[in-house]
Length: 452
Image (cartoon, rainbow, N blue to C red):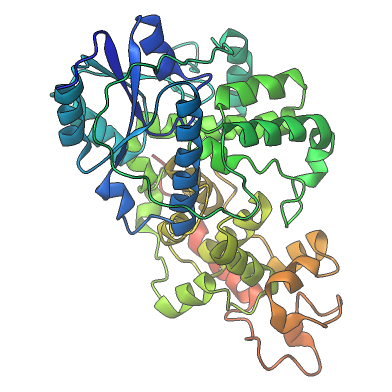
């Protein structure tokens, strides 16, 4: 046993950074040396919802953080297996007396942490959100269920955030324990790894692109987006610091996007089952379409609607699509095809580089109309109109659908209307006018039912 007096375990989960880190600061404030531990949990690593690209980005980010730790005199201890079992072993091997970690709110995370805390000295701290769930409530203490009201209160709460620029480097002298090797990780195109890369990207966006964000955020290729979501997903970038820096810039457009993330986290904090359950009970009786053929056409980008297909092919290829494209393809699945939002949510999680349970489920429920705060049931995105508005020349579509290369902008969003449609691209799997009316009828049939 390699006992080190005054040692704490920092259980790394979604906080891959050494600054603005509540778990690290709690250990340092207690005058303890810190042993950073990452556990490769087979429940998560082998999940059918795991994304190859997301795991690759995670591994590469862990390698980067390990390099930062080594420069501070420490290293990342890696173990594989059940977290409760592995943490108990590390406590025994190291002599550490306490475990610090940042609280998470996914259904599995809540079960896992409750299990660990039942037998081990686990202390959970805030940090996943910019503003911790429970701090933004109505005057009577009840939670906000509508985003607009939440945002107003959330924005005011930023003034009280306890942000520091402290770099914790209490790692020298940590015990030498056996460690598994981190898996090798290939770089993910478009997303350089590491805390400094994340900070640089955020600062560059705030300085150079934020003033154009209101218009740029609608770009289908994501050129006007901040593209920091994968860094927030794993805590490579501090959400609290990003929120405060954005608030200083006085740009509510982008600040609202950060607040949406916190809003969805707060929903799961109240009821983690809403990751997989309709937020409005009347949708439990929705007659969803269960056609595998329709779902697979959507998933593989073969619906015959170019904008939808381009988005789904980009998702499969890169693991990232812009917010506008996410809404368009989600609307098509849930309203044109009337397929359960949970099917789309699961597919996104299997591919998204930034896949996060709260934001993913929240976004899908907003589009599908099943959440507490949701798009109106009659909002049904026309992939044709959206394409003509946001991709008038068809550049985005042609980038991801080579079958439509060379087709003029007149036809690129409606190739089936050409005198001689392309033979290697499918016709629409459903007529837009018919699908829209079918969705309106189905949703209207639920309106008389009392929402949860």
